[in-house]
Image (cartoon, rainbow over all chains, first blue to last red; front, side, top):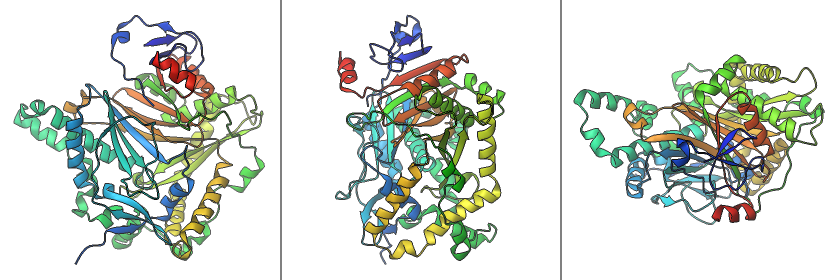
Amino acid sequence: MNHCPYCQADIEGNWQQCPLCKGSLEKRTDKKASDPVVTPKY
Amino acid sequence: MERQKWVRLDNASNIFLAASTNSDTKVFRLSAEMAHAVDPGCLQKALDKVYDRYLLYHSVLRRGVFWYYLEMSELRPIVEEENVTPCTALYHFDRKELLFRVLYRKKRIHLEVFHVLSDGTGALWFFEDVLKEYIFLRYPEEFSEMPQSEQDRMEQQLEDSFSRYFRQQGPQSFTEAARSAYRSVVKTSKRAGRVAIHFGKKTSRYVRPSLKPMRKKKRVYRIKGEKTPDQRPRVVELSLPLQQVLPLARQQNVSLMIYLTALFFEAIRKTSPDFRPNDTIVVSVPVNLRQFYTSSSARNFFSTTYLEYTYGQTEDTIEAICENLNSQLKNSLSKEKLGQRLNKLIASEYNPFGRVVLRPIKDVILKGINRLNNRHLTVAISNLGKVSFPERMRDHIQQLFFLSSVARPQFCMISYQDCLTVTFTSPFVDTAIQQAFVRLLSAQGVTVTAAVNQVTDREIEEGRR
């Protein structure tokens, strides 16, 4: 799980940059980051 | 004597056929994220069991000279691993296939339904039963070791959606299950003699274009953009803590749906460079008629209401937009207005024109009506409300999702336990509106988690790395 500081939102999935604002993402280091995430495969 | 195995498709559902396109397939999806990876074997068994009880879901759609009809089939559904884009078309005129599919991937179970078959509420009954049956089969030890008192309570809670809604009438035949909900309401009300529903000539006065004439004078804003390369919808799933969002709506004295719609309007205004100061945003909102009229039908039983807000008339605050939209919704849900809308739907169902005109001609007319309607519409929303499961099952279901194929940006909302899921779908690549919506929420202190699908070649390539 990554975090977008501009959108102030956690971003799931394998994104190099924020899919909403195209800004840089911060790696989350809290507990949530280690949770297995189901990224929507669409 | 062999019982009839087909039912003429109701006129209200015909519009979905006329309006469906490659990008807007009129398919919607309900999903559940389970606590553990999905066991496909258990899911298949659960589906088989529930499928036997829901005869409506045995339908295939056929074309006749004068009308479409639902025919009972001997096909059996098979659960599949998700490997297609969401809401891929379910109906192909040259194939005999079921009008729904059940998919799974990792921890998620999806039910996709062609809107001709059922609406969101009807599909939710089926989906709830599949999930309950799946949990029973997947974790039998949890339920066999329960004390008797708890088992009894559980049984009470587990009275499945099917029996809850259909038990009063006893087992249904295919034709009863597949009959138009509007016809069922007329039948029930005539028998009971307590609900005054007028149809036929009396309702002809309601059969007129649904759009208000005054709307012509306004410039209804329409969102344009670059479409996704392979027509898959752009999906933005937002998970929001209910306890954080609900107080924000309460502050405005409106429902969650109205509050989020107001934010949607603001997000559109802020991010659309060609938005003019006096433009009007119009949203279509489906209203579940089962809340107001007794109906045991799982077929489509809703009416669409339109809410609009014209900018530049007053101070365009969230508060003002909420108040305006709320008063429109309240007005449209008045007994009189609801009655008018239901009568209109019933009149269309009994309209002889619908029976005698050749189907291809009706298709062209309905396509034209749909195109006209779309010209006066900016966005759409749909709300399935709060879903609950018996206590013992809650730990096995983590989150619920609801989304729909679209012709224009739309959001669908559903909540479960403390999680509200708002899923935006859009035919466009751009995510500026969704981003502005997120910003409006996060600025209010709401913890937003977003999951976005990859739609462009570049995004898909990056996702593979």
